[in-house]
Amino acid sequence: MTRKQKRLSVIAGALVFLGAATTLTFVALGQKTSYFYMPADLKADTVVPGQQIRLGGLVEKGSIIRASGTTVAFAVTDKEKSVKVRYTGILPDLFREEQGVVVEGSFAPDGIFVADSVLAKHDERYMPKEVADALKAKGVWQTN
Image (cartoon, rainbow, N blue to C red; front, side):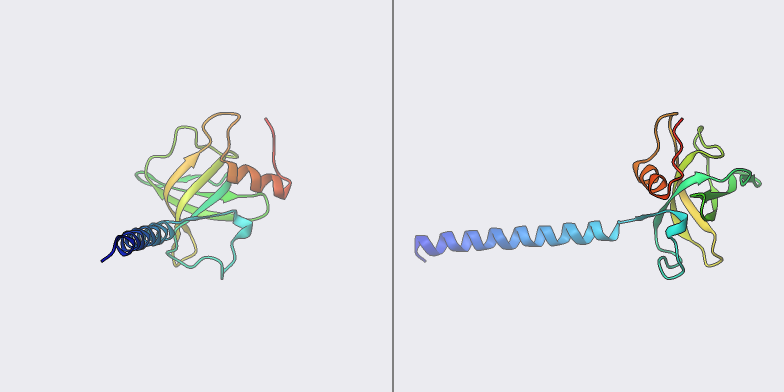
């Protein structure tokens, strides 16, 4: 092999390695993607039961029902449509009615959203960006 052929083989090997690493990275990230939805964005054909998503909006007033143990049922609304949510675990301290919330989980076959985690508004001026943008787009944004 000449020096030129050696250089070309090293460059070709490096390109193959970078291509493989890039492909594996995108495949891994694509499998962990969870999409963000507002309740009004959900349609029957949009999300299949078991698909991991993020659901955001406001905790509907009068919807919090505490069951035995740490199971809580509530509804997330965007003032247009609401989705029933069931969560088993400890809720954030600032979780309350009419406050911004993002829940991560999936829909059960019965149509209830089963949350794996609940993220609540952390102070009076903060709301998750996706939730704030979606509420502003729907015209229901309230400033404190």
